[in-house]
Length: 115
Length: 114
Image 1 (tube, each protein chain N blue to C red):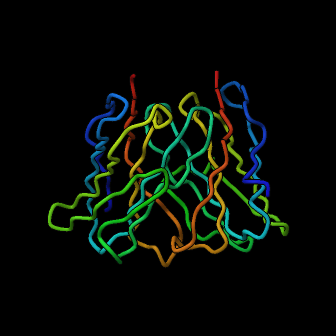
Image 2: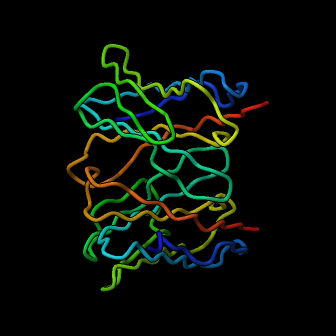
């Protein structure tokens, strides 16, 4: 069965510092991997997704993630944090991208950005 | 263009009651999925409907049911509410049923069961 582990339920960085949010997955088949962001009182917004093409995926708002099969990881990074990046971030996996769109989400990481 | 709209935004019910949550997908989207997000956890898949047929079901009891209408809007019904059903219920829509298509989420319905 697929699963997602997000290391660190809370991450705090200074404005301008590197953002690194960790995600490890398990899947018996090549997965599709996703990062979503959730702002307070809003739904989820797709940041980026990996679909077995380039292993380095660039998303919106300056975020990117690298798929590392040997480490079963898909960590999210941003070189320089902005105050507006403060939100909850979810990593998700699906091993049936051609079937139906069931996503398995991690528990989330809340990112705080301080001046 | 309007995004995915859900109603109501907030709802308070008591144990044992029944609830109906509604979702209107983005115009042209034929697939609707429902997720439950308990406080402090990631969303959990409940159902997916495509062209009015159930395409997938998560690990939820039979108290949970859903349907999709000819205009592609959807309802999620929960019977015999339990305290543990308190959660944010998210609806998501996409053009087609698989994940090669981008999934768009609504802002959710916050259900509180007292």
